[in-house]
Length: 426
Image (tube, rainbow, N blue to C red; front, side, top):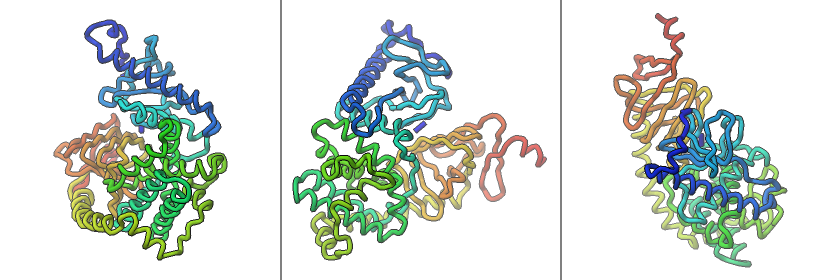
């Protein structure tokens, strides 16, 4: 999601920089693809032009191509776009970012080599740039219930039914969609509060994912969305990722059932709107049992039972590392974060483990490739097993900004405090 050194342009004509020139060519070509997508759409899908200022950046070097200049003077005009190196405080992610007094579409290079995958990604992130204008909040709930065995079973069955619906037509399509809604309803009944939590991601990443497929997948939108669902079957972590799979499916099914649904969605989700049209008999337990068998429920349940047993041991290890062992705890004051939504594990009573994570805050930057935990109340981030300096640990590095220092405590927890606070305690 989110040095001032200038990216030297003269090297474009030099034999020493073919990769640089190639990157500019690839980035400018991708931007032209995005413009073509918007020109074909002409604002019809959401009532607004989704295109806008765009940055394509190499996350390893922060070398970036931009579609236009920036207010900070970071970018230099090449004639084929603008190039520069993003400063350390600029967020990096496939998303939309507020930077240099402008809202940008941001994409991380290398972009997908497959044209359809690339176009889907371009349209997805373009929707995020227009998201505030469309009135959709970018908030996400933890959806920790989706790490639990029963919830995962029902979500996987929902995905399978949705994939069947997308590959079917007529009555068979409607019946499979009703069965998907049956599984969804059963999950929401089994986990009170789940419907509201899931809706936050449905209306954020779900709508973005639908837009990407609808505008980027050409004439094969249904099959493309069905393949996404196939790929998400037995996914490692659903809590922050499920809507990437079912978002396109529900949106495309609604396109046929109620073509103007986007202008009438209000506070609803596409799944809610589809349920109002198809009216699945959610109270019919016999139908749920039959649908479960039809989509391989016994196989899914067995796989999830085995996963739950393995996960219990993993959660015990995570709890030991992040709640009982020596650790670094940093306050979250004005957090900006970059993470992989496919690598998040809920730890009941503690928070969520992020497999890869970068957090920037008033105290500096924490960067980890082997995990950290964000507490359930979003008040602190925890890194495990710091070394004697407190600045590094297994797979993580802390960089402090001037004015902050570490303060070891008797409880084995290292915390960060302002230097002025440390001076007052001496």
